[in-house]
Image 1 (cartoon, rainbow, N blue to C red):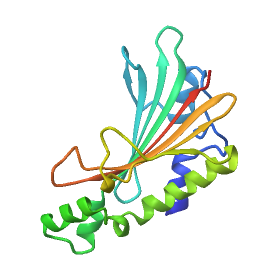
Image 2 (tube, rainbow, N blue to C red):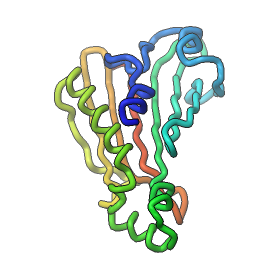
Image 3 (spheres, rainbow, N blue to C red):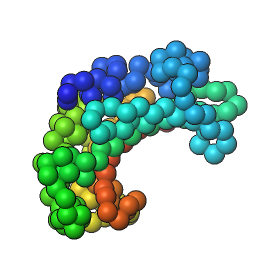
Image 4 (cartoon, rainbow, N blue to C red):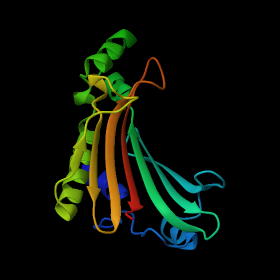
Length: 187
């Protein structure tokens, strides 16, 4: 399952991980990703694709573009998993127990697939670009149980980040683990 999910995220074994380069026309995006997307025009114009992958994982991909020329200027991919589902599948029933697991940072055994995919992604980009600069501080997800980590690679042409953290801010009785990959041109 790890390899299958990894291949859903990394479609091209280069830094242009979806097989589309920054600067391509939106028509090229539709050829690769299909026509089942939501289009947003205005501030941060984008095509938004959504896929349910894995047992309880969601994959959202944004292809940002300038409406004047309709060329891709960034790619943002978000993978979210719901550890509460896996906790319930393992027999968890008391919501206070789950909240305690979140706040104590002890969700790892419910995130094995996600963490395995994350590790493969980091290895993939490290093999391509060398060691990343790593940040562990964030303004919003600043508690130790959020396990915030951002990997940053800057090449001659690209700025690539891989960010991961536990999001317990959205819903009181739940949490998601989020992976975000963002690719932009480096000026």
